[in-house]
Length: 309
Image (cartoon, rainbow, N blue to C red; front, top):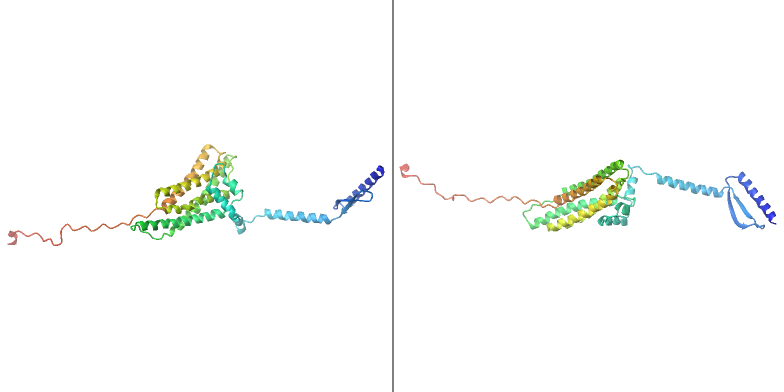
């Protein structure tokens, strides 16, 4: 009995082999149902499932091709991806810039290889308007306290603030990115961030300066305290983010780079403080007219008698 089953199995196997040789594109499916003799039934499919598989593969290839095709930088679609961010992500990145701590990399923990320009753009715009408006309000309040201060609306401060903030948020990251790229050629272990990541880091680091409305408080030491606190938080966030990149470089290069970053940030804060929040000088009041040395009714001296005759 066993020999008969073995012979039947070999016959079925040879039959299936011959069918595959005749139709190489056919697919074999194993049926779970057994024949009356207890053998496994082999079902030949000459193209139905193959066509479905081919269609799935073509769809996958089309999807991969669409993902690889990136729009040109002159098109709107190229820049649209940089503004594809939701509110929760922006708030998380703002929170990360306000609470810097050692060992917490802003790029790795908050950007996650997805830098955006939405947050930096509106942070810079808001900071420019806040600086211009609070600068004018400072002069208005100073004139109320001292009428001798002359004030007129200074709309040009909006332009000055906008140019200053946007140039700083773009040109300084560009110079930093170029320097790190150059250092990477000198020392291979130095791995810089991308240009957009550097711009994103600088843009979110400026958010801490938006509460400069506190500089309206007419207490000089409080103004300097708030300014120093904002500068310390912002500069610390930059240093903690750049340190993993420059620590593989020489000690001199890392020290010079981080010192330059902090110095430029300090110059920005000090420039905003002295330009936008400095009261105008007092008006020059004309000195009062001094009284004449001689009274107006003074008579001329009398002539001698000899000259009178």
